[in-house]
Length: 173
Image (tube, rainbow, N blue to C red; front, top):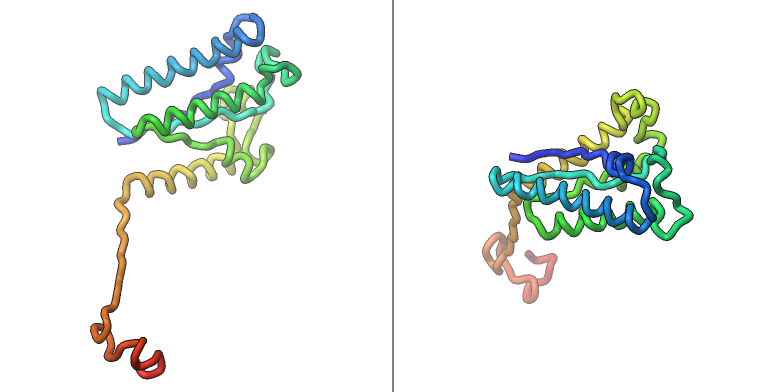
C-alpha cells in the first residue's frame, strides 16, 4: 500500500497572522511538523509507504508575508522546509520525498507550472509537469516495490571453457 500526498505549502503562509519574520517562520515550521506527525500516526495504524512532495517556490504571492529581503526570506524558508522534509523521510522508513523542486528544475518553471489554472482552483501543474511527476513516481514505485536481483557470475578455471588464462594465454582458451 502507498499514499501520494501533494501538499500545497502555500496555504501555510496564507493563514499566518502578521508577526515578526522570526515568529512567522516558527509558526510555519510548527505547522509542518504537526502535518508530519498526523501522517506518522496514520501510518502506524495502516502501514504503508507515504510519498510527500517538497516545497517549491511557485512565485505565487504568499499574502506578502515573506520578503526575500529579510533574514527569513522565502528562499531561506523553503530550504528549511525541504531540509525538514528530507530529514523526516530519512528518519522514517515509510516516508519518501517526492522532489518536485528538482523535477521542476529539469523542465523549467514555465513548462512545469500553470499559475493561471492555480488561481482558478483547477491545478498547479501543466500537463507536461504532471507527466514528469508521473514518470518520477513510477520509477520510485518500481524501485520501492519490485525486488532487486543481483547476480555475480564467476568462472573457475576449466569450468565454462577449457584452459587457464594465466597458463595458456587468452588466445588458446
